[in-house]
Structure formats: structure tokens, C-alpha cells
Image (cartoon, rainbow, N blue to C red; front, side, top):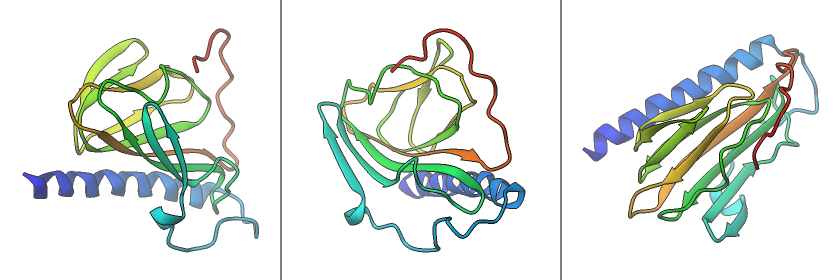
Length: 161
């Protein structure tokens, strides 16, 4: 079972890399982008809150070859908690669940999310994740804005937190 979850998590990460490469090939060249490297969890910026911990590898100020902004983090959410209520933003976002389970809310519709699942939010769609398990819910998140790709027009109304 653990091997099956590991394989699913690996495949989910392959999807993330594919999306990233799309931005790479459609972007413009810059010398300011992130260099090839290993981002170590021990070097990530830790944020500890009442809901759990988020280790931020790259902040939204980071650029890659194909992105203007790249946010990546590994997040541990305590049972019954969420990082924040459902919200929306102009960037695309993926989350890969690696441990625990929860409820993924997308535009008011709730679905179960479990280890190995890849969650995706289109720009400006309301989305959120709540840990509904008795274990810590762990997920890897990647949120970005591609170079040379205009964000959709920001809708009117509340964007959540």
C-alpha cells in the first residue's frame, strides 16, 4: 500500500514538472531566475501557526526561467484544521497530498482528498483544504505565474483569506 502511494505521489510530481516545463518553454530568458539547486527542508523558512507548520522553499518573490513568481512549500496541517478558509487568487495552484486526508472545496463543491491525490485550482476559483483525519495532513503546494501569460481578469467580489 505504501509503495502504491509513493508511486502515485511520484506520478503527481511528474505532472507538476510538466506544467513547470510549459512555463519554461513559453517564457522569456532572464539572468535573474533561480539557479539549479537542491532546496533542503532544513533551509526552508518555517511558519508555525495554530493549524500546523508550513516550510516555504521558494516565496512568491522567486523567479524561475519560465515564471515571474514561484511559491513552493511543504505543509503539515493538524487534525480538524486548515491553513486558511477557502480563497481565490489569479495564479494556478497544485497540491499533492502525501499524508492524511481532508476535504477539498472547489467553488463550493466538496470532495474527499487522500494521499496520492493531486489537487488543482484554476485562477480565481475558490478553493480550500480542511484536514478531516485524525492524522496530520501533509501536502506539497506549488503556485506560480508564467512569464508572457496574462492572468485572467480579476473577478469582482470577495477573494476569501
